Image (cartoon, rainbow, N blue to C red; front, side):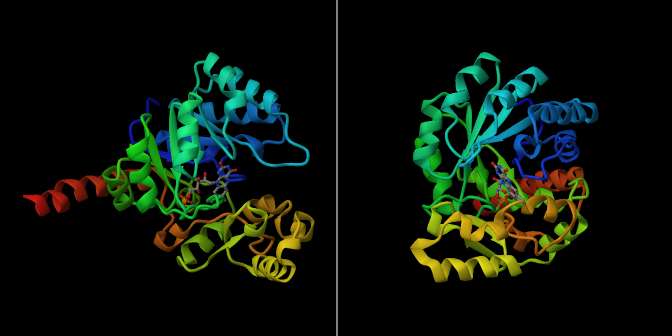
Length: 317
Ligand SMILES: Cc1cc2nc3c(=O)[nH]c(=O)nc-3n(C[C@H](O)[C@H](O)[C@H](O)COP(=O)(O)O)c2cc1C
């Protein structure tokens, strides 16, 4: 469907999904994704896509995240920039992309929608998405409010969906790929794992923090606002959780803006690890090195092959 060699996608990531990372993933045979809203304007996005196309001939995707915002970005202009740039794959997330489907489909673009439940996946299928990225409770960022991990969510999705889907959340290595394929997925989508690579254009402190973190170092925040986010714990996150506990149902976004507003450039570009809350998956517990994207993808594919061809085959011989 996407014209890629290996069924491994790099999900959109705010202030991580720049041209360098997307090109490195695509050059390694996966699908690299530029994150549209990290670019301050549709013109800046067009430039970022052009920069990426200078670095790779392989297909790339653009992530378009629909966020609940007081001043929403000019989505139609971002969509136009994507279409005019000739990109043929869009990852949507946040809420279902019904509004932009007609114009994306008219432009011959394949749409993969990322969502966290079977019912949202079925909705995506119904409105004409070509594929779904099924994001389990393990994931970095927004796992939704159902708390269903991939061990259950993936086979449930396989039972219900007619369109292809990839497994997202908690994916790190060949074991993840083999297991996800076994549970009915057609590939995997990774976020956190791709940050800890040589190619990710983020501060070294971020990569080191992911390598140092165990699966016990993440926290869920914003649950009282029904906008749950999984983040790496730090001083700001502890402050935020204390406010959640003290204010209870009275909590508003204003109460926590110091901990969540404008955090990403400070963390990702400046390496200020206590600047605020930033998304990170439980999968950090499985990440112990900082390879290139090529090394990572090659390793995942060969490990998965070995698991299927030796370990699993031997069990059923
Ligand atoms: C730092 C960071 C920023 C992210 N930003 C976005 C985003 O802007 N839009 C989006 O759809 N997903 C975003 N995600 C989610 C990833 O695309 C992906 O779905 C998720 O990381 C999968 O879970 P994993 O980290 O366990 O692989 C982000 C993830 C991380 C780690």
